[in-house]
Length: 325
Ligand SMILES: NC(=O)c1ccc[n+]([C@@H]2O[C@H](COP(=O)([O-])OP(=O)(O)OC[C@H]3O[C@@H](n4cnc5c(N)ncnc54)[C@H](OP(=O)(O)O)[C@@H]3O)[C@@H](O)[C@H]2O)c1
Image (cartoon, rainbow, N blue to C red; front, side):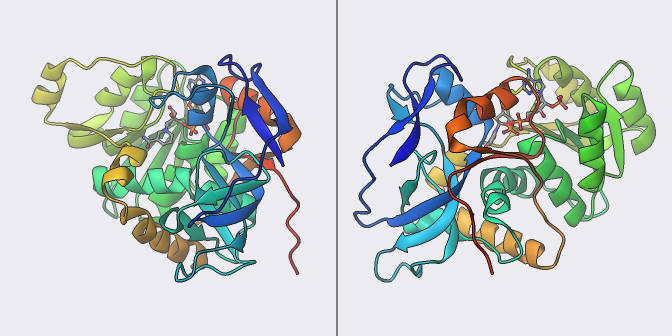
């Protein structure tokens, strides 16, 4: 089968599409991949900078959507069913995943949108609901609001009844954040903090931050007294430090949300989260934004979109066409 393989830990330049043996199901669900998800962790993996280091050559990818080829008896999955799987080596024509890492894709969504629902929306849900304790009526600030996880947080935040202030770096991303339902969109140039304070009437209740880096200090300053900040990632490229006097004197909470690490200890969480996300999809309140679909052969270019800060919503690799009646 064809797969996108990291041959050298050099980022996109080290990725080639090559023939690899098909994976064996061995008690897992075997999925024929239609859409493989591209996310920031893939970029970090391709450079050897992810928290889990893999030695080349290895197949890239952590998630894919497609149709079930075979499934263990009693797993609840049937051949032909449309699913999304959280799985290593997913930038390939076939992927295997244990049944508790495979979830149905709602009929309303394409498989490309289905793969967007996994890492991005599960992470956004974990960050907003479990770690951030977002409540209806609160004001939510989302950094990197047109990116993968950020776009999911905007849509989900709106679906949960928050007033959403999106922060993005350019006008194209501002349009995307508005289409996702953001109430206000602020460009991340000089003066963004004052604008957020004005729009929120003094400060936000919750900030969701996948960017951090040099915007982090002002994100901390954007919080209202007793506001909460959820750290999601470091897409901006550096890991910021925080002076604890700020946390103390402003009476704020700063927490982390690492979805993968949490799920390793709480394997029942994804099924519960997914059921909730599917309900929101079926009621028309979530419809993941797919900003780019590239063929598997252009796997390296897909990574370059993220590397060059050009990704909007979910970036997807098209592995097979989806034929739907
Ligand atoms: N905690 C978790 O469980 C979890 C799960 C998945 C991903 N993550 C992390 O979340 C972060 C975002 O992932 P993603 O898949 O949403 O990525 P993405 O689609 O590329 O979005 C990242 C956003 O960060 C902003 N950004 C600022 N400086 C950047 C730079 N130098 N290069 C690229 N982007 C930059 C961009 O927004 P603007 O241009 O608008 O500033 C961009 O839209 C990553 O750090 C990833 O590792 C964490």
